[in-house]
Length: 137
Image (cartoon, rainbow, N blue to C red):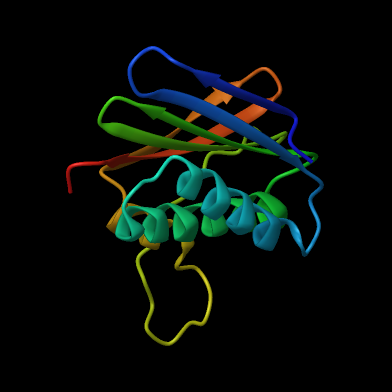
């Protein structure tokens, strides 16, 4: 399941990746991967919960609006935790205003609310949507 796993021992830098098929089980697999990885890096529970939520939302968006395989990447570098989710569709993510009457469309609003920063990067193969979290929160 893990495409690549690397622990770099220069201070507090770690990186892990998981490749997923775009199925209805992808978000659950991503949540488990994030929870297990961040737990092994002994990060605070509140940070883990926020990153798990963001990963779930970004992977769900990749399944519903993206294309092709999905890659989840976690990178801990100093006082920052970076989550990235890739898919093979170059359409940028769209943050919509939350509608209290709608049961859908809250994913990026939740990422926006929990992350220190978020955005996307287009690539030749599609896009990465990322969210950063400060460890000192």
